[in-house]
Length: 195
Image (cartoon, rainbow, N blue to C red; front, side, top):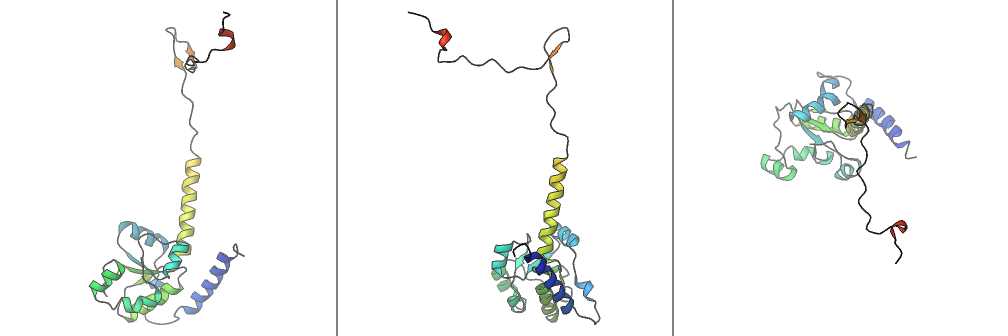
């Protein structure tokens, strides 16, 4: 059953996203999405503020995207109406402005982050985007990238043994030998002399 969990989650979430997306309006829903590559690059450059709208226990159990600020979906509307000082105190980051274009919401697979996006747009944050792949896509892509890096490391030439050392004046080479063993402090049976 545990092996089927990711597959079932993907199917259910895909259907929920299809059902939830707006079908008309002045702005198409594609304009609200931030793809994985862009999010990763902007997080690395520090040019995006990512708000994870999952419950705190989910971040502990499943993991989180580095640099994300957790504001559970149920708190989003109230949080973004707080005065800047209270927002900073409660969430340990600066409150975004309504005209900021660096706000991105995320969740597990894009459903709750889209709900958060809609709530924020109703509050006047018209440039907010969401990461539709969510933590599921993030963790899968990170895992694939690590595997690719690991495969690259494993395909390099193996370490070669050291070259033979030239120990004579006439150019003969020998393989280095181990240094002589230290004298044994316990005499061997051959070393015993009769008294």
